[in-house]
Image 1: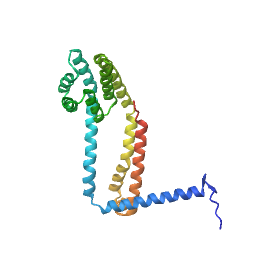
Image 2: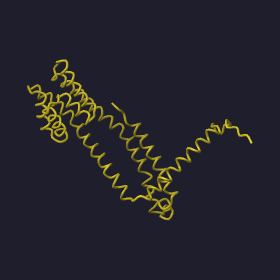
Image 3: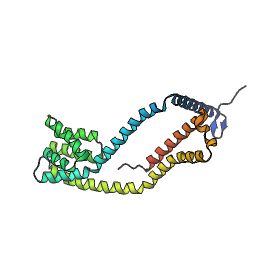
Image 4: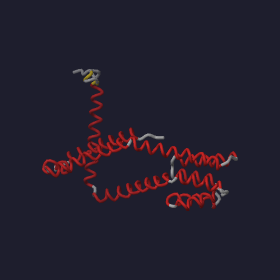
Length: 242
């Protein structure tokens, strides 16, 4: 019996449909194996691994956000201090001690490296690598260029203050305009969980097979994967790099 593999069904050939079916079965089998492994593992072991990881990610993101919020204050302070006649290292120490928090901790590392013999521009470049953000890269670039060309760092920092201020105002407006999209992403991700809780409270016998059978866990895994994909797609749409 001869089968025409190029025969089209709903716009797909038999060969393409066969490939898609095999890929789906492979993914389905992988999810089933993963669910069995998760069920065999201790729940406390999973939490012991994921808990510190996500905690570290959250603390790192919060620290980076606190640093970025004070970049404008740091730039203005450096500009004013250098106008008063201070050198860059002294200005960094003075301004960071006034700002405190993450800025003071990171600048303290820069000054420690500088006192140990590293160039101030290189030390600030390392700071930019630890706390990557566009405003910090602008400051580091200004310091490096003025040291290489002999220009006025005070004038450059004064111009950077206006640039960073305009960027901050624009980012605040942009964050407001994309707030609805971010809320929709969070709502879409949390809706299935809330629906499961409500249905479980209303009809526990109907929802119990989802958490007591392998098929139910596979369905939960597939739904979770699709929800995560949808969340990141919406987040990518509403995230605008400036």
